[in-house]
Image (cartoon, protein in one colour):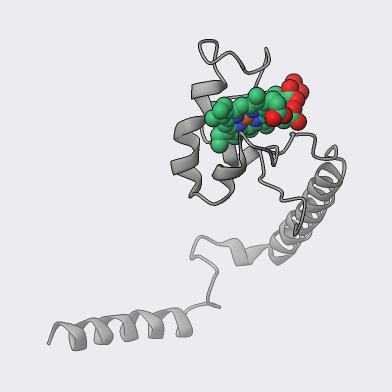
Length: 125
Ligand code: HEC
Ligand code: HEC
């Protein structure tokens, strides 16, 4: 019942739009100057293109990845088989001031170690 009512009203408003003006334009006299809205579309498109080019330029300029991967050695090999969150629970046992292997000064925010430090196996990458 509600459904049909909705369809009816939306149908009606469609009809109004169709026999009024082109859909997408408002009633507030924008059609009195069609050149103005074309110009707006042109500048909006140009702005978008410039923005996209700048964004690509920025991304290609990114320096090569320098974050050291997790070493594949006796201390770390067990973490290669664990889930990331599970493994991260162990990192700070060693990589903290108390653990004796503190993170370097100016180390970025350290939540989720393994998002940044990849586990690259030397055998199959
Ligand atoms: C048992 C102690 C211990 C634990 C636990 C541990 N590490 Fe380490 N880690 C070390 C030691 C010792 C070194 C330095 C020697 C080496 O390269 O293995 C090191 C080095 C590193 C390095 C530097 C590699 C480089 O190129 O300089 C990274 C990155 C690292 N660990 C990440 C982690 C992460 C991430 C975890 C948790 C998943 C973790 N470690 C857990 C002892 C540990
Ligand atoms: C936001 C990304 C990020 C996260 C998260 C992160 N690190 Fe790092 N880590 C880095 C970067 C980048 C460097 C290199 C910093 C430098 O060279 O000054 C680094 C350096 C290190 C080093 C020293 C490596 C060396 O060769 O001296 C260790 C050890 C380390 N991180 C361990 C960890 C541990 C353990 C965690 C989690 C508690 C962690 N990192 C979380 C980005 C991250």
